[in-house]
Length: 324
Image (cartoon, rainbow, N blue to C red; front, top):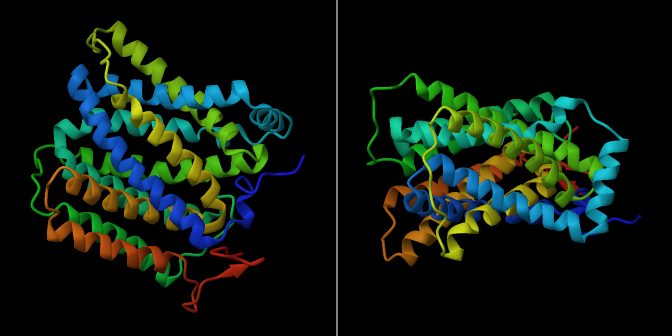
């Protein structure tokens, strides 16, 4: 069976891969805004996260139901099995959902965001260096190390002037570790996608493991009386968060083989910051100079993350951003 050009990630130009991930990051900013409203309506951040993940999962289930190619991808995953832990990418996403639901009210959005990006940037650098992603090993060259540092600096810059709760600092390194695990999610999903050759098939695997774990843990918490009852809102737009999340999963799996885990993580951050500015403008809020500066810093980081030791983009088999 021939592959679709959309699914043939190895032939995707680096600039297009970056652009797709930046758009996915902008969608992630919209997802955060929508999920915040959903959480407000049902008065439970954890329940809102479960609802959002379920909507994203239904998208992949629908694709599995109507598309023979998606089912073929799952059959390939069954026939050519990877080590079991390679399928655990969705679990890291589920852990991040719990971290956000419980840590943000305790340490605040600013501290949570900085800790998560710190962990994710360093984790992505290490993941590329270890060769865990589908693109193989990408050495921690000085430009790439600088890119990770600039990503951290950008998110600190964007959070200037926002309140930080300094009473529960022990949660910050925990969130950093969870942020680092998100780099593994991108790498593992990319590996699975090499087998399925279809991002919708891989997305279903991500949903099956990630949301499955989420359901199990929430069920235990609910039995202990820790999950309040709620009524689902009737506004359809409040469920778009799951769609934005599914879109980010798809573009990440297409892009990670081409640009690596670090450049993908920094590109997502660039999209999130740009998307946040766009949302502010739509709401009639003037973006702060700090956020505008953070976007500029992140753009530089995206470029640096694609440079080799010599300072030029590394090209392998005609594709920019791959290094043996």
